[in-house]
Length: 98
Image (cartoon, rainbow, N blue to C red):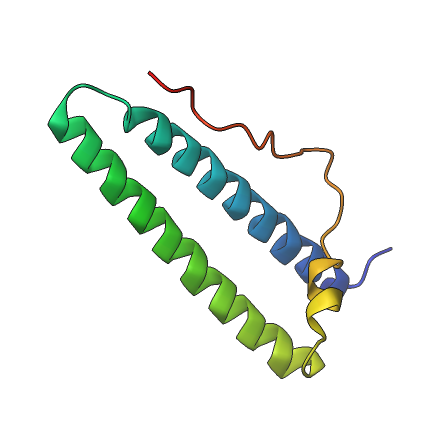
């Protein structure tokens, strides 16, 4: 049986992963829209990329501050390798040129 702290840690981990995946999907879609011939669509897509980037940066900053407060400073390689494998991988694909 998991303790409450373990359950909260798992919830936080799932939330962070989902936010990252959602940010990646919105950014990819916005980059595809930048190829539009409509100037308004291109402007809106640039704004969306900027907004998603800002949201992700603030989340990362606050998450790192919280982790540092809870666990002390971590080495950069420890943070990078701490992500769990959720079976979902980034395709790394770039939008097709038009």
